[in-house]
Image (cartoon, rainbow, N blue to C red; front, side, top):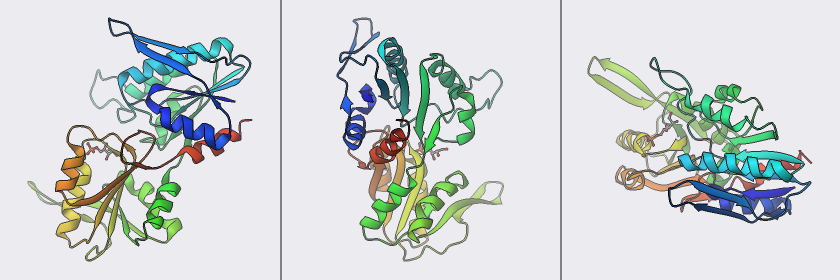
Length: 288
Ligand code: R5P
């Protein structure tokens, strides 16, 4: 097995290789003057199982992934793709007539190469969208490593999903470690009045971990934090699997009273304190 690190996942790819004790291929990534990408796997992957690791954060990451699959397929005996953050997954249905189902378009382009035999993803927005892939991805769950990290912090929080969609993640983080969990629920009081509060638990005086699959602008977390603090929560932490942190997300969450922001390294940033490398390495080792 040889790990092919995509531009978007250099650090994670190196960590996965270290876990597996296998080599990392040197690659070249650059742009032509007109902006088109040039991608080359410099090291030899002849007859090897090439495992490409590339999150889809920027649009150009998809192009680079397709280029790496194409290049690897020329020489490798087998090609797998690890896509730790699968971008475009939130547009998984047609909400209005004429809209593209973006994740379907992405899935089709990735699976167009018959050389690709396995795909791994980490916590997709909705597992149902994996049906669009001809090669069904194996979805890995970062909840256990997030739960371990919270335990190492020495806190005993209530884990809160900011909406009902985050309930399964909150449960998966909390239950193995014996933490209580809940989700915020919207209750319409009048036509123009919505109350948001935890579905069942009293958070007063408690430390809180808000956990979501993605933090993008930080708006969801900031709103959840304000509500929980109004209800008397003590320290409020924000955890996510995929930390995109666009615009002023960090400041926004800080102003809303978030004490600390933690994400995994599916999207690499200064907040990537939890690594999914071992999780991915363990799954890859079952392929050999
Ligand atoms: C939405 O469905 C996701 O699970 C996240 O809650 C959302 O992407 C967070 O976005 P933002 O940080 O911009 O509020």
